[in-house]
Image (cartoon, rainbow, N blue to C red):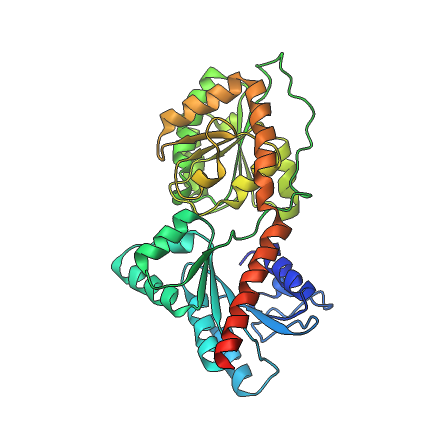
Length: 372
């Protein structure tokens, strides 16, 4: 499992808010106590910060669950007032978090990241999601689109809209000079950041890029990220004959992502499904114009013809049309990038964390009143 810096960031935020934090995980790369290196085997781990209310973060691992059960039965120091977990694909986090919340009789809050809620609609997964949505005391979703999904699946579930992470506007910011308005034949870099999998619609992007590259031979496509379709994409790019104009960067550390955004000219997100895309917000914060599919939370982030364009999913022709319009109009790219930077400030990370913290505190207050 890859290290996610936001897990530690939200724990540190809660600790600033006079909270005692328990971070439970089977991945030692998440440990952020004074001990730099944690043991590699799954174990019960907690970091204590300040006082008052406690938070719990969990990650998926069966042996870790067994260790957690032993920790509970052996009476280790573990008395959270509220369980907060981030849901992922196998719903193991949901099971563990609800299991612990029932034992301890404390509220359980599920933070749905998007794909875990929006994908997997066979009968079994629908029932599984419906069960956990209703079992959670509160479900946090990132967008209006996701809230509608919850309402359709489990209309009795309690739900609130709360973006997953928000954007660190100091880290993700424009750093480029003025666009060269006189030279349309300069290298135009088209950027994608994210997982390389089918749901991201990258095969439609590379097909569109063949035509773009024929019309603008100095255009470049850069793919940042890794995933199961990487080899298939490389073969497709080879078949299309655009190898020399496409670059795979692989996995990039979080702190290095801004360098890729600010060196690009246009950001593309061709997903077939989305919650509320963090990479889209990061690109906007770095002052890029964006082209994204008209799905999910993309509609809530992109202001058509002001910050970029929304295109039909699985449409290479629309991608070509919109990308080429931006290539041909550097001033428009500059205007859209400026608009996006201002627009995305509403998703500033400290603001999002403050709102999330208030939601959890209010939920905890209501629970204590009911218990009292």
